[in-house]
Image: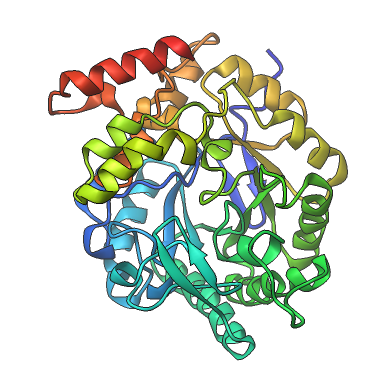
Length: 408
């Protein structure tokens, strides 16, 4: 088989041992906003499982950028703990990346320590909470926080950073007309809406220098009417190339508006609410959850058609395909279309050693059943596959998972 899957690949100054990357799927394994032994053990298992690079997910560049209690917050005091993690990953032959971002309006004062901020003022049902639009004079210093986070990542031994510019988080909130209603030079035209992204990328590339690879996760579409469509997202991709991105991770969706467009399948509402502590939230989501989080059918490589349009338009830098990859056969197909790398999230949660198995078996396929239990659990506990839990699942959750896996 003529395949590049197990050949080396380059992203900027970084060479990976193969074309696989563990995607920045949020682990929820950082109580106190710092790395835990659980985070260490999980990423070490993925590195030992043969992946080219594993990505520690969703580290906030400031406290105001935190959207979850168990989310990483980049600050000097956690650098030694992160260094222990990157050293262990390197010992297994894999590279280490960290995703850096700011959640914008998708937080609550109890988590981020202030009134949540975003591209524009308003009310966010995601939390729910009122949101303050960022002042123009705050934006340069906030962009510099991304650069500071890159420097901390370098101190911690990371080979790459992935800047999160998609999924309805802060940079995405500036880009999308759905969330950006500004009347100044940061709102209105797409050129204006890209201005904050440009500032961030300027700080990131200065900090990265010639030593750290810079990837950017971006939307190919927001996934709903009134959001960004493909034509504007293609313009964003071209701008990111000009801004110094060394690879683009092609995704889509808006966590606060179209969450299952990102992940596909159904959200197991009963599993999600089972772990919630707040009674009003628990029963509110049970009543209205299926309306708030509509199902988007899962199919393997569900972003491929959109990603092919980006492949035609962007030739200067590597493109990373992410979305619904669970078999070697489909991965080979995606790489055969000209994508330099693939990312996997749920597949490597289900089977951390999946890359090594793919090397041994041409027909390898992971055993993920796409019930999305791991995502439902993530919001309150940690991201874990129901097939590998130490505790026994209650019958009501087993029943929901079986129903969803049969319906996929």
